[in-house]
Structure formats: C-alpha cells, structure tokens
Image 1 (cartoon, rainbow, N blue to C red):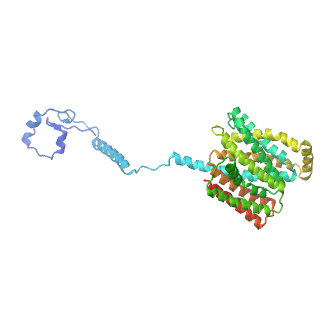
Image 2: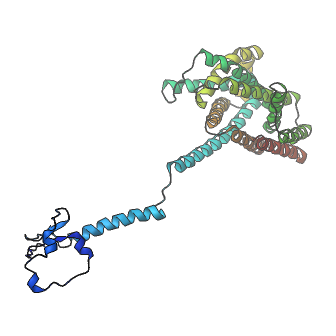
Image 3: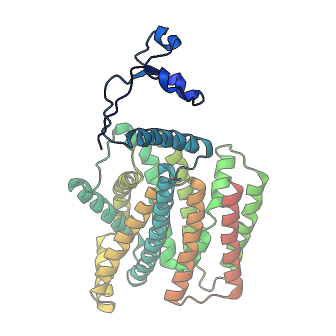
Amino acid sequence: MISSLKQPAFSLHGSNFLQPRRNFPAHHSAAAPPSLAAAKPLRSKTVSLFKSLHVSKAESFSIDREKERSSLVTCKAYEADRSEPILESPEVKSEAARKLKIGIYFATWWGLNVIFNIYNKKVLNAYPFPWLTSTLSLAAGSLIMLISWALRIAEVPKTDLDFWKTLLPVAVAHTIGHVAATVSMSKVAVSFTHIIKSSEPAFSVLVSRFILGESFPPLVYLSLLPIIGGCGLAALTELNFNMTGFMGAMISNLAFVFRNIFSKKGMKGKSVSGMNYYACLSMLSLVILTPFAFAVEGPQMWAVGFRQAMSEIGPQIIWWMAAQSIFYHFYNQVSYMSLDEISPLTFSVGNTMKRISVIVSSIIIFHTPVQPVNALGAAIAILGTFLYSQAKQ
C-alpha cells in the first residue's frame, strides 16, 4: 500500500515522541516555533515532512519493531530460564554405545566358551590326545588370523623384535596353561575342571604376595577362604576324581597367573590391539608346543587313535575337531578384545560368570552326576571368586 502525505514544513525530533501530546492553534500551523527554527537540524534524528512520505507497506514499521522486540525478548528468555530443548549429548550416546558393545562382548564370550568346552570334551572322549588337540586349537587360530591379515579383514599389527621378546614368556605360560587344562578335561568332567580353575584368584594372590612382594587389603585374603574351602569340598566329593585331571587344572591356574603377570609387565606402552595381541600369542605358542606334541604323543599314536575314533564315531569326529579348534580361538579372541573396553575387575567378574555358565551347561549336556555336597562346594568356590573380585576393587 502506497500513500502520500503533505504537511507544512517543520522538523520533528525523536524526542518529541516522548513528550505529551499538544494541540497547536490553527494560526500557528504555517510557521515553525522559534525554538525549533533556531535549533540545528539533526539528520540522524529528524524526519523531514517537506516532501511526500512514501511508505511501501503500511505495517512495515510495526512488524519490524515487533520482530526486533520478539527476538530480543526470546533471547533474554532463553538466557534467563534455560528453556531451550534438552538434547542428548554425544558423550551420553557414546557411553550407551560402549555399554551395549561390552554386553555383546560378554554374551559372545560366554556363548563361544560353552560351545568350545562341549566340543572339546566330545573330542577328548573319542580321541584322547590332549597334546594334539591343544596344538590344533592354536593352529586353527593362527591360520584364521593369517587369512584375516592377508585379506585386510583385520589390521596387520606393527611389531618388532622387542615385541616378540616380551611376548615369549607370556607365550610359554600360555602354552603350559592351555595344555594342562586340556589334559585335565581329558581325565575328569568339564564341570570339575572349571570348579578347580575357579581357584585361580588364590594362586594370583599367593604369587603376587610371595614372589612379587605385593600387598592386599585384609578382605582380599578373607575372600580366599571360601575359594579354597569350596574347591576342596568339591574335589573330595567328586565321584570321578582323577589325580592327573586335578593336577592339570591346578597347573593351568598357576601358569595363567604367570601369563597375566608377564603380560602386564611386558606389554606396557605397546600399541597392539587385543585381537592382534592374542593372534601373535597363538602363533608363538604354536611354535613352542608343536615339537613337544610330537615328542609326547607322536604321529603313530595319533594315526591309531584316529582310526579307532572313525570306526566308533564316524566322520563326525572331524567336524568335532574342527569346531573345538575354531571356537577355542574365537572365544579367546573375544575375551582379549573385551579387555580393550573394560577394567580388569569387570573382566574378572565376567570370567566368574563364564565359569558358572560352563559348569551348568556341561552338567546338563553330559548328564554329569553331581552330589548335593559337591554342588555346594562348587557354589562356595564361585561365590568366593566373586567376593575376591569385589574386595580387590
């Protein structure tokens, strides 16, 4: 809307808008008041009415002023009462994603471990050669990682001679622990092996205290009592007790304690992921174990045992051997990958829960006879392991 206004010549200052409205006499409208005529015109604050005032939009002044006022008021209101929408911060989202990732790691770790123990026991029942079985497990893992590196599925680790030197004692301890646990499972029930292996925290405290000189709070020492007592009760009431199986589990505990100690001391400052670290550990352990497997058992015993297993089980024994080897690597790989995301305490609690799942599932699948006193001993030992992880926090 365009309008044209004609008014007599006088200048009007912005300050006049603040004064009360006045009614001027008609005979004074043609001339400007003396005070106004004498004043120096201010271009920035004066509206001249000599010329026609063209307004492009009649509502432009009021709308612009209202927009400016509303924007100012809105900003001040947000500043005053913080009424802006509350958005979820990136830190909160990343923490939720991390917890979900850890949960997936734990579920995968436990599931793969249960499957491995089932197939491992099936193989050892039909083909009782624990040294070869242990070697096949390490060989399968090494082959899987070599293929993953060749196809760029996994990042190739950057290692040097110092890395392999620091890894050597870890690999020696890992090899001993792995073979000892497999020997134990070939002689006794899976549940009994894992009940004895739940006493690993007692070995850890004793080795750290008397060899490394570390000290622990009194609650840590007290938590060892139910571990030792529960394992002892379970061993005394085991229906199919075997000294070789019992000693194999105990040696495995001691070896894995030293493995953890060497790993913590030697791998500080090394930029190798958990997955690649375990892959390198498997390869070096395979190199160490292979000559001992040939010396202790040998190809002739393996061939005779394999023909007997084929006649009793059939080709299914091949699938069992492949499955236990593959699942052994995957469950260990996932456990090492989880160490990149969680604290040692959380890992210890997860390891305790893993043993419970393995013990229960093996008893159900293999129909292992369990006396009430034996089950009570297992429960006490596992409870002690959980209390140990909490007391060490």
